Length: 149
Image 1 (cartoon, helix red, strand yellow):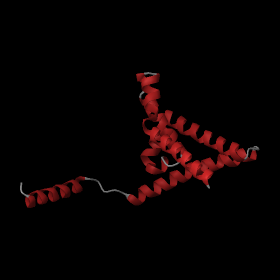
Image 2: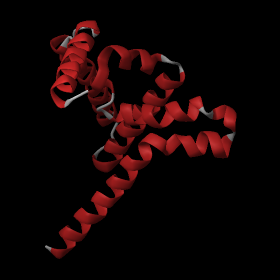
Image 3: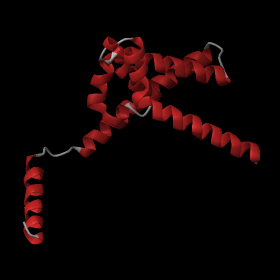
Image 4: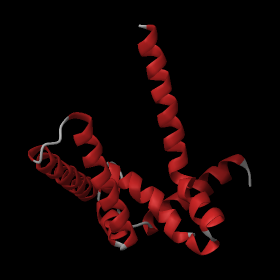
C-alpha cells in the first residue's frame, strides 16, 4: 500500500474497532472508585478512633491501624472478596493501603503451587517490588535532604 492508502486503511480500521468496543462509563467508574476508596478510608478512620479510645496514640496508633488494614486486605484477598470489590470499584480499591496488601497477596496465592521459594516468595513481590524499592529510595533521599538542611 502507498502512503495515502495506508492512512485511509488505518483510519477505517480504527473506526471499525471503535464501533465494536463498548462505550466506557467514565462518570459511573469515577463515582464507584470514589465511593469504595472513601469507604475503605472511613473504615480505617473508624479503627483509628476505636484504638485512640483504647489508649493508643502517635506512632503506635498509626502502626496499629496500618496493620489492621493490611490484615483485612490480605484476608479479603484470600477469601476472594477483594477481587470482586476491585472489579466494581476499579482504582478506588487499589489506592488505599489495602490495595497494596492485595497486590502482594494475590500473586502469592496464585503461585503457591510452585512452592514456597519459587512460587510464593518469588512472585509475591513481582508487582509490589517496584513500589517497595522506590519507597525506600524516596525515604533515603528525603532523609539525606533533611540532614543537609
